[in-house]
Length: 619
Image (tube, rainbow, N blue to C red; front, side, top):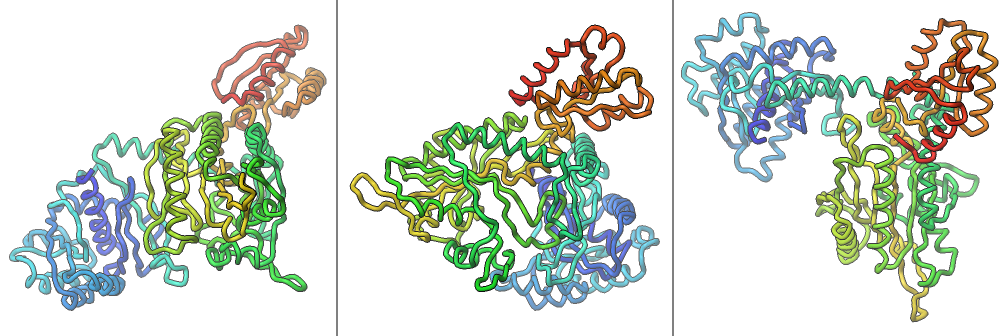
């Protein structure tokens, strides 16, 4: 893995060199990490890069890997480093070097060189401004490195690590892949930079497999499929990123919501409802006003100021507080699939991935400290059942998300240590495959974040369990213990699907819009072979619809073969074909679009089979 890290890091430098050679010698460079399967460089060029530039850059990177370039490292003081960066025309890096100098006495550089005798031949088609620039850099760096008979082709402030020579990077092991955009220093008030991505692997087979994976992910992209499925609408008159669910989308959402409630109802959860806004005071007490700041939507009333709710938990605290509970009543479990609102930055919004209104399948448990482990176990059982049903249980793992130092959190160290211990103990007792994630806690408490993999093995953070000793304190919540004294409850926040909008997005791409029967917007498509059987098809539809099956008939003027093709393109799980034999024998000819299986059943038998598969939520 270390060698692959070196390769990707080195390719970042080679990519920047390729941009200087083929697009802009004066390009401004920012950061250049390797992440997962990718590497990238954030740049500011003299023109906007376009998709056609990717092929040019890929060819140039390939050429550089064949040039037998050496990587050299040296260190210098901050004053000399700034002079070098100034001659490299890298103002962003000068600012970065000044920050580094607060902790480091020396600033590191990596330099690429070729044999000077090869310069004219290797660089004969390259921008003269690039060559002129690096002739100057070669002279400047000659006092730091032995550069006799060498020509510098690239230099960058960097600590490495890198390969020793570009010939270590095989030209079949990488690809310059895509463009994106990112603000300098991740601040929307700063200049927008272009992010150029590439990916690299150890073997040709790994690269091929990853290219195939990307192609499959592109086919499943919910931003492409949502319009074909007519799941939701984005209206400029309503506001971008406040999705409107079409009937098909609402079917999916309601099926998921009903399934979640079915599981929670059997665990003695109580359903509640809360309004979409509240006075500013509520969120000042909870701490959300300080935490979310500009992300909160503000509403002006006649006499008071309000926020659209960013979280449901403060409302649920008020419901608990309005009751007189004793230790015999504990735990109290509230369930509410409720919509909350956050004014996310425009650059973070995408499809159903990030929107400004999300519906959380929210739940809050008010319990005693001694009940935490058992309650977490109950939630874990619900999570496992839910994701087994969705076909996503294989390979899951859990992140125990705890505080990082020097960050703003609610509550004392003692409270946090108690909460972190409670979740760790539960994770160990229920043998969860967990890892500790520092800095990942919620601002009011630690949490267990469940990571699940979809059908093409992409990982998503979905379910969460959060342990909170702080909000009960801030809202002065209590119940009466055995000694008739007031005792503070613990609150456990939990969401199984994270949010229904985000989960719908994951499901669209997980199933590639070939939903299982219970989740499909339309479950059965009846196709008559000829118009003569239309009336009988409508009789069948009435009979199936009476059992709450979702059925449509294709009584169009299209040919029979086109009707079958359309039914499969529409991803109806079951296609029922009707002609003389079926009508006479009261049977159905059925095609399972997912498995391609074809079979016959009696009509009543088919309806019963569908009802059972839906009831059991078969995949």
